[in-house]
Image: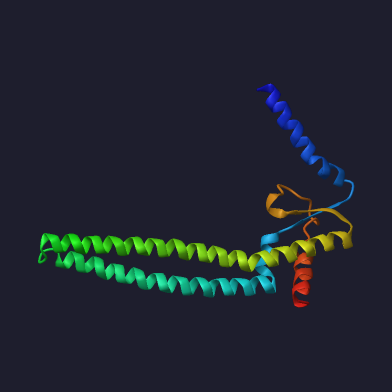
Length: 172
């Protein structure tokens, strides 16, 4: 157990060594999610995502309404149908319910794929912008603010990165 902990802490120290070396240079933090959300390209992607999601929701809501109507008809007709007819109607309803569940899962996968399709190019460009910004301004390390527990005031370069990202996207 002690050997395992020793090895773990040794590896952790090796992983942190580049940060310790960077302590001599400038370290910045950036809120990547905020840049993506506030940038012109990010807002355009978000609008496309919302429109795509709205379209998917509308199709699913129509199917869900049909299921509700079918469920109500099942309840209403239960007293006047034969047992065999009830069983057949219940089986048909279950098949429609399974079809709806598959459509819901498919829709969720399509929304996730669309999000990936829209955000990956933006993220790639943003990381290029961050790298260029770091080089141009003498930063040794720029970390995502979400993984930083504490940073001194003045280390946050989110606004500058946002401006540079918007400029880079405008040039495309």
